[in-house]
Structure formats: structure tokens, C-alpha cells
Length: 99
Image 1 (tube, one colour):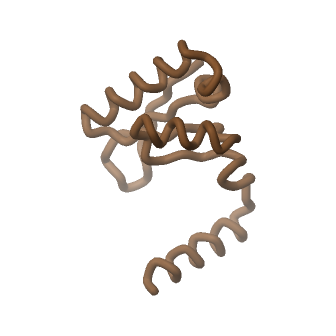
Image 2 (tube, one colour):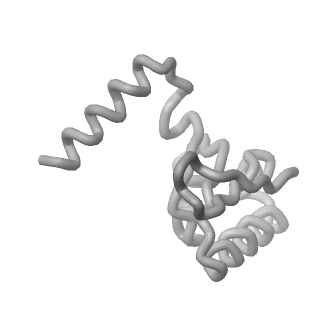
Image 3 (cartoon, one colour):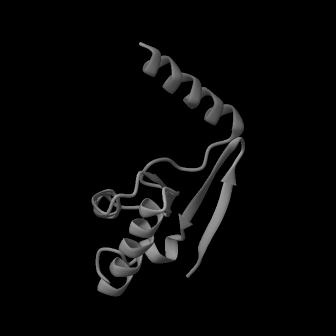
């Protein structure tokens, strides 16, 4: 189980990543739930970003959202994409937001 800190390109704000090993038992293990809740609360209190990795079920996504996590990644949201497909998806998203 790991908690990693990373920096996004030009974003100077630190973003904490909650490893998927914490997320995998989130809805069935009270201990993991408490750890994830604490990490999210701490990051939010300090004004830091936090992203939950390895979201594979609706229940996991609902739980991290309810705990205050504002970003997530995992197979539930998208399988890994090649550069071409990722660029197209981002362009489509930008077009939809502008409309």
C-alpha cells in the first residue's frame, strides 16, 4: 500500500494519489475505508488535490466521491488509451464543454 505525491505538468499544486491497493477493498474493509477517508480529508484540509487510482466498480466510485475525492482513474472510467485515442477524447471533451 502506497501513497504517492506527484506534480502535474504546469500545475504547482501537489496531487496525492491513493494507490489502487487501498481502493480494492474500500467497500468491504472498514480499515481501508478509514485510511482512504483520512487521506482524502487531510488532502482537502490542506488544499491539496487527491486522485483515487484503480476505480473498477460503481460502488468504489460512489464511496470515494462521498468521501470528498474529486478525481479518479481506473477501468470503470476508461481503459488505457494510445496517444491518438487520448488526444481525440480530450478534443471531443473540449468541444462539448465549449458548447
